[in-house]
Length: 271
Image (cartoon, rainbow, N blue to C red):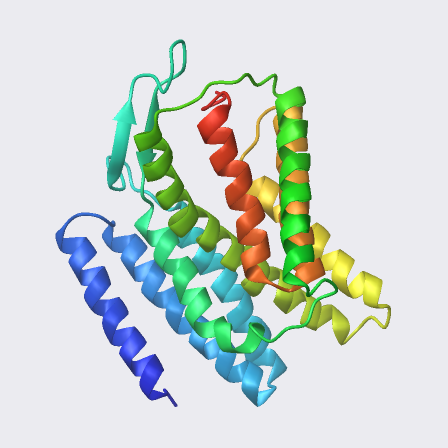
């Protein structure tokens, strides 16, 4: 049932999780959730290939639940590895701690491993690299400009060393993991589901985009109307980048540009 590459993947994942447990870089329950998540994704892919709807939907739903649980679970008294901690990123700023959520990161890369072969050849509406780059820039500016106005942000340039470290962690952990989960596990699979039930191409694309936007907002626990508006716009824009290009790198790029420009040049953290 398992290919040679999949066997190697599970062996390496087990070794890596064991090493993180020894170093206390991941709680035991989160490690179990990540391993269960990877197994369920494998089973989902298996039933997808066999075209067996019952197992397909069962394991897809289980993968979503386990993925969310792995990313959000943190027992009392446990903190993920601290990358850096500062009292102020700039004069008058708030304290900020940057942690590396190892469970969410591993879950994201599990998705990439199992879905890469089935999604990398998808053809979007915008396929030119130049046009995709222009789209990424326009969408990033749209989110940043809206956030600047609604959240009353100000210019605050951060220290280069913090920008570099934050950028590396945010890109390789947060943006890659969140976009892999939102676009390949949720949005793409919902597109497949709706394509079998709805003839209109617009609704096949629009419904998954809106559903993932709602999930994105809910996952970020915004407490104010302005924050909800920003997260709604951001979630929609990240999903739109993927919808138009079918390129995961496009949605990752918009997500990362928004985050790194916000961190590097504007009020951060906001609250």
